[in-house]
Length: 478
Image (cartoon, rainbow, N blue to C red; front, side, top):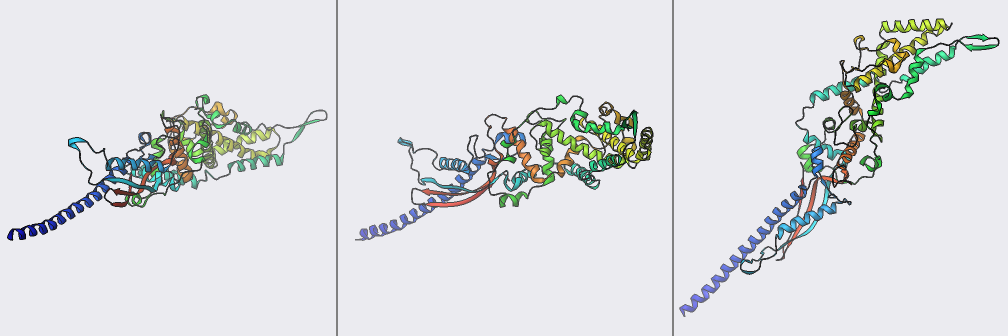
């Protein structure tokens, strides 16, 4: 009878022990499922980021994932499928083995729902996502001295009215005064009268204004790049795909975009006249950021005209304070009006000569800048290059000058870019990126608005033993 008591006791004890063991096993299984889910989610989401666009990194030091994966259709669903595949392969790495080495998967997990509901596309928030990453990239770039010089130059441009002063209107007002006074007439033969010619050399200089700046300031305009693009193919001219903007986690870690740093980055990565890049489609990329025209010629012409306008305003401001040059112009005006028998024209003719002289000096300035020289925003008599007779032979009086003091062509470009509309500058920068990336193999349809750098995924897994778990994670380059 005692043996029977022992058997019952052991049976009851084993039942309790086995219950405890199975409970521990089940608890271990639940913990293992959760831990594996965490690990697989981490591996899968990092694997998605590991598919960053190689050419974008190589050319522009940017880390973005292309949702088209080199194909023709860009959609976040492509990325969801990639993430699901990565998770499933890590949940069930291989089929169960046969024979002696076989085992049973005690977790039996499968990927369930994979949904990416938030993702930051490069062009979101008018390019803020792109600029946020660039700000991080350029964190250690020594921008202080460069940006200070640009800021001073931009202040001078605004204070002197180089962008806003209506110089053409002022010049036309003096020409209108000449027309109002009129020239005397003389009888050249019986009954035939003609105006006495004024022979104002300012008219010769002004006649060249329609010739095009590049044709006047370049010795060989044929050497200008002839590249032409179709703007409608690029980001700034099409409807854009949209994400959800900069995610809260990225903004908390790295902060927001820094506009001056972004401008410094553009000069690091883009070419311009005199510093063309072999990799680029457009050779004058900075000029494109400013002009947005279809051809390199048009973009360079736009910048040259703007430079000419700045220089002409600055040179008029100076020449009207230089008593020696005013005296030269007055002497020429008096001589011309004396011959024309109309001394009352001397005053407006003097000013047309001064304006024409400043115009020719400005052409010389643009020629100097494009040749690699320097020109100060505000000149002194020592900086003035042309003589008064230059207005009689404009192109012939311009000399190749690569020296001087003041700002270079690049520094004038930096000031122009600083003054450019922020959104226009950003979208055109992404145009340039698309142009260059599309030149590389397998990227003919590349789009910056199909690239994301941060995403949030809602994930779930299910187990063969009735378990299911969900989680939400945010991963990205920040």
